[in-house]
Amino acid sequence: MTARLLLNIMQVLVVMLFSPLLKGVISRLKAIIQSKRGPSIWQPYYDLYKLFRKDEVISTDASWIFRAAPLVSFAVPLLVTLLIPVLTGFPLTWAFMGDMLGGGFILSLGGFFATLAAMDTASPYGQMGSSRTRMVSFLAEPVLMCVFFVVSLVAGATIPYIVNHAWYMGGKSVIYPSHVLVVIAFFMVILAETGRIPVDNPDGHFELAMIDESKSLEYSGKGFALIKWGGYMKLFVLMTIFMNVLVTPWGLATAVTAPALTLAVLSLLLKMLAGAVLIVIIESTLAKLRLFRVAEFLGMAFVISLLGLITYFIGV
Image 1 (cartoon, helix red, strand yellow):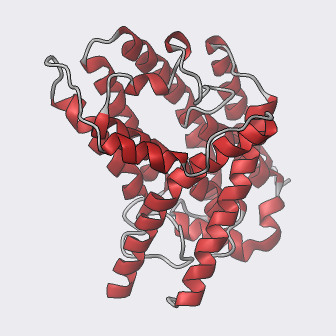
Image 2 (image 1 turned 180 degrees about the vertical axis):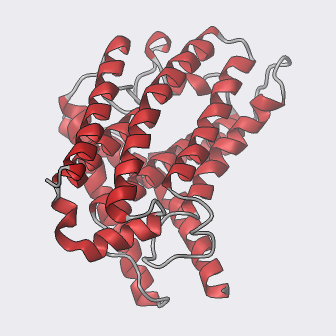
């Protein structure tokens, strides 16, 4: 029991420590492809260090929601970390406290609080970005529901550890058309939920075009640092689910030994590097969609997930 608690703590620390690195690698690779000098891969760590040392400026009209939103945005990805296989292929202490759908609801709680906080200070840009964010989330939810439904049919469960074990033991089931279609649909949702191109541009700073970034415009200092760090961890957690549960369920530790856990950490980092390369390729070859085209993008994701469901039932 003690060993599993320590492993949970280790998984949380891995997500906290390496999530800014994933952001830094993506930014660095994009700069290399665009023939720019670009920032260092350690730049997100410098930014967080600088923000934690600054004072906060909070509007006198802000309520407790504005002050609580950064803490919720920071804590939510860590709660999901307790439910998913980050380093181990065997269930840990809280593995059965929630399934993939429950993890999605927990992640959406952080976005919900961030949306309320953006409207709390009556900033026009925050309210505009909040309405756009809710629209994207509203369109992404049917896709997630359909994806989880297909996963539950194929793997026989929606608990991430059980799904990982089903794919790991299933062998060639990972190349079935239904599985491939679900993977594509889920990745499209990741791009939408984390504010990546083609849905949103995380590097853009034009207020009228912002979607996800506009929710944090009124924050500064420690609050802004917690929101940014929470965003890094949200991307890392979703990519972990994508890689360790759906795409490459191999490389996780099967024993509580130092070599096995070290190999699991290295395997996870290699998977994150592969995911970063995929994101960079997409963001370097596609342009940001206009707002009304985002519905078409997520509508296509829903059709793909629905095709995955149909191909499963017809046995293709």
